[in-house]
Length: 73
Image: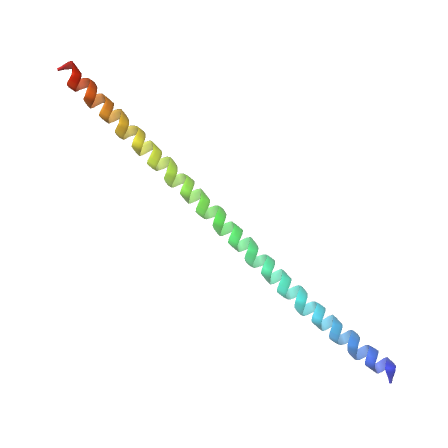
């Protein structure tokens, strides 16, 4: 009788451990996907920052050129 009770408890424990392990693995997969999306977003932010910086540099260069031309006249 006790043996059967131990078998039932062992089977239930294995099942519970499997469920917990699956839940943890799924949670880790979600965390990895989240981190990958954050990396992708940060790359896009950096790209946008670089383009905006280049645009501002060109605008400043153009303004300086116009100012120099105006001074020469």
